[in-house]
Length: 303
Image (cartoon, rainbow, N blue to C red; front, side, top):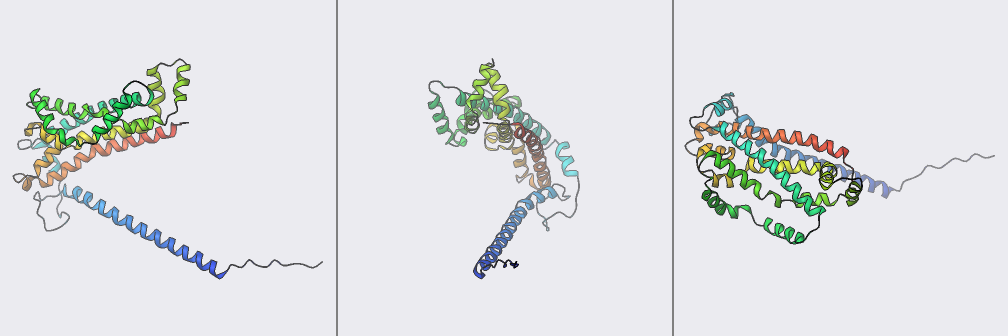
C-alpha cells in the first residue's frame, strides 16, 4: 500500500499581491479616518477647554498675551452670583431655569397628546391639520417676533418681571404641539394590534395611552424633553424682543450684556464662568435622560 502525500495549496502570485494591496489600502484608510477624527476632536474640544480655563482667569479683561490664562482664581464664579448691584446673574439663572422646566413639561405633554391623536385616531380634517402644521413649520419663527411682542404688550405681559415670565412660557409652549411629526412617526411604527389587544382586555383609551404607548415611546419622550428644555434655555431672539429691561433678562441676555462695551473689561472672565454655569443643567439633563433612554430601550419590544 503506497502512501500519498497531500500537496500544499499554492496561492497565485496575483492573488497574494491583490490581497496585500487591499490590506494596505484598508490600513491607510483606517489611519486617515483616525487622524481626521482626532483633528476634529481637537477642534471641538479646544474652545470648550478655553472657556472652562478662562472662567478661572484672574485677569478679567478680554485682552491677554497668552491663549490660556496664567493665573487662576474662583472669584469669577463667586462674584457672578454675589455682586448683584450691576447685574443679577443669579436671578436671571433661576428665572430661565423655571421657564425652561415649565416649558419642557408643557412641550412634552402637548407633543405626546397631538402625536397620539394624529397617529391612532381617525377624524375629519386630520389630513388638513397635518398639512397645515407642516406648511407653518416651514416658516422661521423669527418672522412672528414683532407681532408676538405687540400682542403681549397689549395684554400687559411685558412690563413686570412676573408678566415677562408668563409671556415667555406662553410663547415657548404655545406652538409646541405643532412639532408632533417626529413623535407621530415613531408612534406609527407601533402595531395597532397592541391597542386592539389592550381594548379586548378591557382597557380604556387612556389606559392604552398610558400603559401601552407611553412605555414604548420613552426614547422619544427623552428626546422631546431635551429639545423642550433647550429651546427656552438657550433662546436669544424672542427673549430679547420680550424682555425690555435688565430686571427681566434670561441667562442668554445676561451673557450678551456682559460682552457690551461698558461691561466687557470687568465681566469677560465672568462671562466665561456664566457660560460654564449655563452648560451644567444641560449636561445634567443629558446624563439623566440618557439613563432613562437606555433603560427604556432595554425593555421596549415592538412587533
